[in-house]
Structure formats: structure tokens, C-alpha cells
Length: 228
Image (cartoon, rainbow, N blue to C red; front, side, top):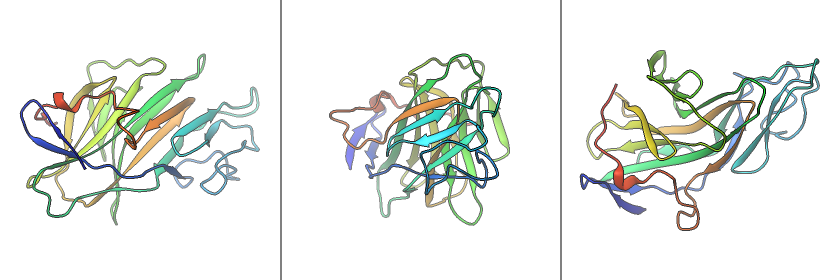
């Protein structure tokens, strides 16, 4: 654990775990009925000419655009190998966090979502969508006043477990918090990072080595959150 403190002197413990992009969810989103690109075959082209992602390595995902006049660009949903699990017997604020740098293709419609999937018998997605300018949990959506993004913008997603209260999730863009936080009114023990991409490629920082590759977001400026 790497201890961090915000300006209100709330002790934060950044929980560093080895993580990587692993699962391509073809139950929700697939390149075509043939499911050409999947978790076991994460690099390749769709036989129907549709656009879809290629999982290049543990941290990098490349979107391969559709074949012109043949296919369409499809959404892709990717999850990490490991979930963030609630620390046991923790007396401080436990923090899980990751950041993604997005590169969008020019001349086509781009789409991206970043967030956490609640694991368990009843799944739920907590997400931020830049194109829809909204933050949501399950069927509830909260619209933001304005949200624009450019190539190489860095978006972050954090999960904080307080020692006693319910956990919450927050989102950042280029080091600044976006909107309000989402209070999780249930003590689920496990959340898994996920993204949805269309015509966007990503480079991820899971916090493996913060000395050589620090986060853009400065946790010393993390305020006590306001909630939706």
C-alpha cells in the first residue's frame, strides 16, 4: 500500500494490484455472429469487415476501423483480469484507481465509456460516458452540463472504500474530477474495471509503477465528495 493524504487529511491507502485487460465480452457486444474476435483470439479482423478492437497487450487496446463500404464500426466491451476487492479490517480509506489515455479516429463517430462492473449474482455497471456527457449507475443517469474531449485526454476512474461508510466511485479528466461521485448503497466486495470503445484506442495506467509513470490525477487534491 502507498499512503496518500488529501487536503482534508483523510488517510488514503492506494491499493496497488497487478492488473491487465483480459476479457472481451462478446455476450453484450460482438464484431459479428461469427464472434471472430474474442477473449481467446484477441487480435485479428472481423470476417464481415466490421470494426472492432484488438487487445494488443496488457495495457494497450487498438481499434481496427471497419472495411469501407463493407462493414460497420461496432462497440467493444473489455474487462480487466482482476477485480478490486474490499480490503479486510482496514481502518483507513482504501483507494483503487486507474487511468486511460484515449486516441480517437478522425472523420468517424467515436464512442467511449469507462467505469466499474459490480461483480456478483446481480451485476451493475457504474459508468462515465464522454459522448453522452453523463455519469450513470444501473438505469439511473445523471447528465453533465458540458463535456468535451480531445485526442490524448486522460480519463480516470476511482473506487474508495471508507472504513465504515458505503464505498463510492468518482471519475476524472486530465487530472480534474468530473461531476459528482456515485455512492454505492450496498457493500459489494468486488468491482471490475471495464471500458466500451468504438473508433478509439487506449493506453492504460493501472498504477504498477507510480514513480516512473505517475497518475495525472493528484490525490492530494481529492476533496470530500458530493454525491448524486
